[in-house]
Picture: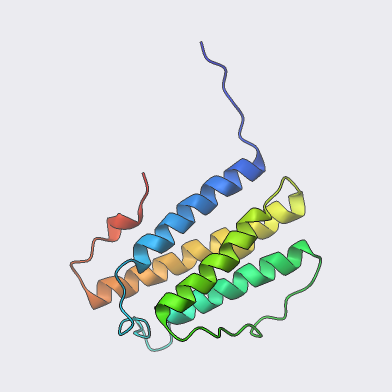
Length: 144
């Protein structure tokens, strides 16, 4: 009989980050520059706004790792295109993911700033994609 391995909190966070990253990439795949600013509802975020917000979440997480309290709403993107916003987000996210450790404070912050934000916005973006194209496969976001 094989021995059951217990996953550490850091390993679980990394697994969840891989899943939420897959979901983000899947829901954004194929979006055009023309689609970037469409909204499912007038008061909802567009794909571009969601990515800028998620970039700010990465900045906030990175600052929390340095014991700096983030001033929400201060982050702005210099990116001109959706592709540039995606590249900017990917770089900020990679830095954030690299900071994940076994430290309890970091684990909690990664859950709040990264995983929960990403999965929440994936849900919004799925709604947007379905509004733009009811034939879009919402199940394509799942990696398992």
